[in-house]
Image (tube, rainbow, N blue to C red; front, side):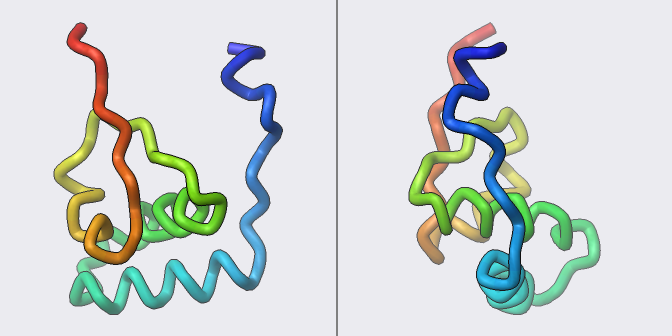
Length: 74
C-alpha cells in the first residue's frame, strides 16, 4: 500500500472542482455520478489513469480525457 501512495495524496481544489462540474454537466447531471465526477476530475487534472473495477460509472468521462486503467483479472 505504501508504494501505491508513494506519489502522495492528490489535492482537490478549485481547479479540480471546475473540471468536476464540467464533467457532471456533460454527463447530464445524474445525481449518482456527482462523486464519480470529482474522482474523475482529480485523475484528469493529474493526467493519470484511474484504477477502478466500476468502469461503467466512469465511462461517461472518458470522452473528456479520463483514462481508465485496465483491471487485472481476479
